[in-house]
Image (cartoon, rainbow, N blue to C red):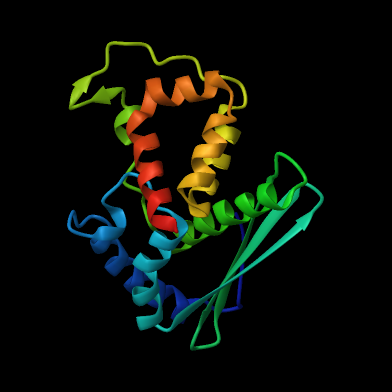
Length: 201
């Protein structure tokens, strides 16, 4: 994310720090309805961060734009002091269609909002990175990730906000090797994505 900001960020940085302390407490609370699953969709992230941000005088403005297949979202955090921070993230849509572009925009909005607000998703890959499962060292070698899997998974995550039917349709039209790899390596993620999609509409 490319970050720019006002000449001074003393006030907004202080306010953001206070807001993040509240958001962190919420995201780790097992009773919090927004983060019960390992996947948090855009509406869930918004619901979790809105009150802490506004309570500390911070407003969020997100502006999407596209240039062909290149899709970008500008995210602006403004503070009541007049100070501001702005960041831009971009990805390439898999095709030039409203649905593909819309999915990218949703994904980028969520990604940028989580990054600015300091939200750490519960599907933290720390354990996986350390090669652990259930507190014990993993003995099996991780399956080879198919080419293009990361981009496909990003598209699937963005589709969550379009509802369960849209997610199911995207799943059925996906390559079998992608579906198999997700099922073999992170079935819980797929289940939580379905649960989030069911809540989206």
